[in-house]
Length: 357
Image (cartoon, helix red, strand yellow):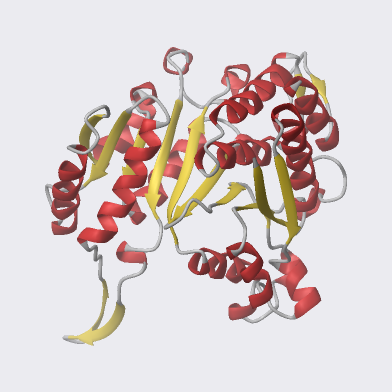
């Protein structure tokens, strides 16, 4: 199978971690007879330096013409002084908007080899942590109208949370489709005891659930969900929720795994063309020193294979190779433990490639 992948190496450690992910993709392509064609795209600070803006139209067009996009990281203090509308992060927002990406999907998986890094008690960790938060990305209170006005001699601020049926249905469908590719269990998070938007959310989700009889479906209030994620995370497989709740819960979920260097993410929209990236930043303080952890980016590539290319076996192979590298005691500096072998970014990538075989 031939696939065109837009590659955004970005800033800081971005080029290093992306290079390791591409090595892994090449190993998968060789093993399974695929052809991955890479198109380099400038975005972020490097694009500002080269083109004067964080995402030139020509670069966006390359992404739109691809089958999916792999991103390292963007930004850094070098560009702190540029105008707000020209900051590196604006490139990412423009990319999400141009690709019409309305679903952010962030796994929370604790690798058993790193269990000691979790802040949760061993009795909880031993039950396993392996779920994914599917968050609506371009609606809700973050994208509603915002006003501040004076009433009765004091400032009054208002933020509007708004959702339409079609917005809920499209993110809900992503949640159900994701569950179908995992363990077929979906938990919808809302605040239906208080919010009209949540009551509409629940109504639409119940209707959708009838289309997916194989998926075990349940509702949960967001305050209870926040407690359950730290009390018994093993109960979750796929969580689907709106923008504000998803922002908070996905950050909580990343903390219980112990290391952000291990966590991938995807953003999906109206087509199978998605944006895949690790959740960590550009870490300019260690850039170019072969110190970065490439596993989050490597696992992002695995997500791309699974969710955009329907290459489940290939994605399984990458995840199994990461497991074997960790079982062998290999650790980058951010996840180093007593009794393990410290390796650099390139060496970790080489190890994962070696276990693809």
